[in-house]
Image (cartoon, rainbow, N blue to C red; front, side, top):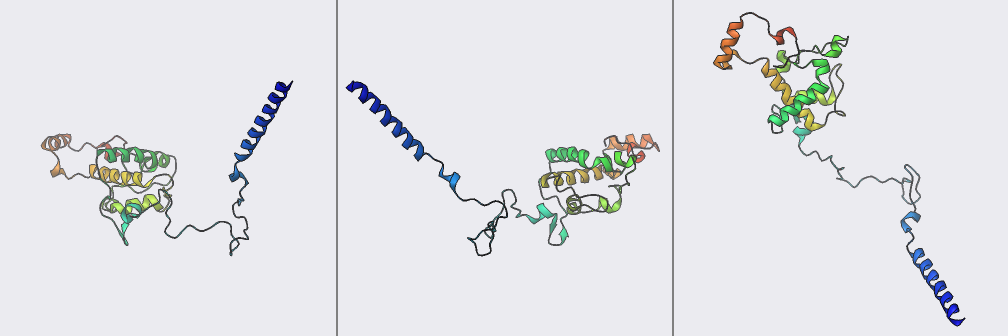
Length: 210
């Protein structure tokens, strides 16, 4: 009988110990006072619960030290060179992004006869007119970023790096349709001379690749 009583007493002591341990593991953070968004606070002198960021705080991914990269300008002037390394990978990315975001209006060759234009949307200017062919890369970046005329801004849809990729590709696309005859290889000059006055796909507005 005594042994049974001792066993029961041991079980009770163990249960009490476990209860004490469980009480010590309570999540105190759940009981801390917390404010809801825009809730009034009596703690701060201005009555606001939300506090301003510490001066100089930069949100993750928002450090924009290079003015040219993020605005397309240095001071008030548009940059005249693409401020990122231009290589085949960048141009391939630019071509892909251009086909998605630009070709519906400008078409794949940049003459302004994209699919939405064929269905009634106002025709944009050709990218091959002198004004746009001679435009600084920073200007094209600014138009993509902020929009121009009927063209809406694309800042929310196209990240900064992709905007420069598109700009680089557009410059190459413009050059491809305006290559000086004298700079072509002899074989290409001979081929073009043999074609005579036959219209090229670019001149007819077709969307074949250059």
